[in-house]
Amino acid sequence: MAFVEICLVLAIIGLLLFKWSTGTFKAFKDRNLYFEKPHPFVGNMGALALQKA
Image 1 (cartoon, rainbow, N blue to C red):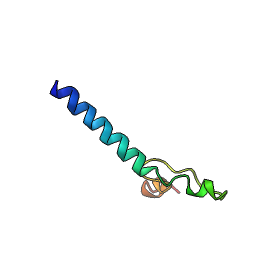
Image 2: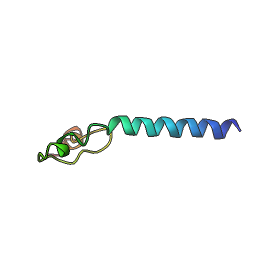
Image 3: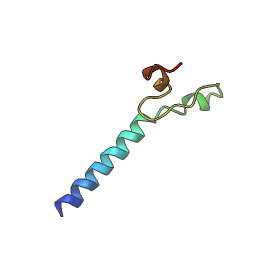
């Protein structure tokens, strides 16, 4: 029983973190501006972080 509860809590925390990290991704789209599509947790800086230009 405790295993199921722990998994459920971790899943909810993961979902909340995902929603929090992607909450502002639509800001440029709402303003009809050109933008590079961001990815969860790294935004559009993933290529820079991996040193790919």
